[in-house]
Image 1 (tube, one colour):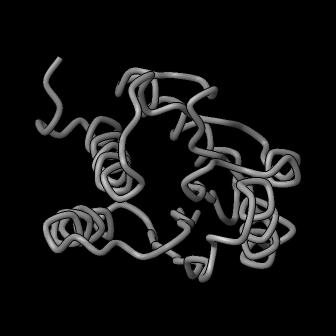
Image 2 (tube, rainbow, N blue to C red):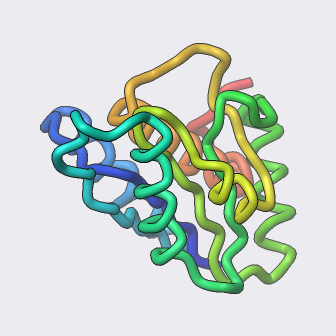
Length: 157
């Protein structure tokens, strides 16, 4: 199974970039992982929030494959502990999925059409994080889940 983190806009903070690259590299030991970036919209001042979400939705849909298991990172999604997330990942791997795609939307969230593409929603926290920060936090959680499943000493509980 390949795990994809599909994000709107590139990470511009070099500290976040370095952390994301570190965990992405570590993940390669456990599974195929990639980050796919959808270009950020330009000239958004004249667009409403709804228009921005719709334009992003078109680009998100184009980046997906029909067989993808799409999971939105959404504040209204299911919250899990790291142990619960690891068990959830294990179930997804056992399903024989070709691609498990986690999607981080733009600054205003997702259009309804993207919600309809999703099989599930996951909440990383009830707190709000910047879109750049959540990438680092979530990639670390995927890595943590793999170490939990392998019984490695990274996670302490």
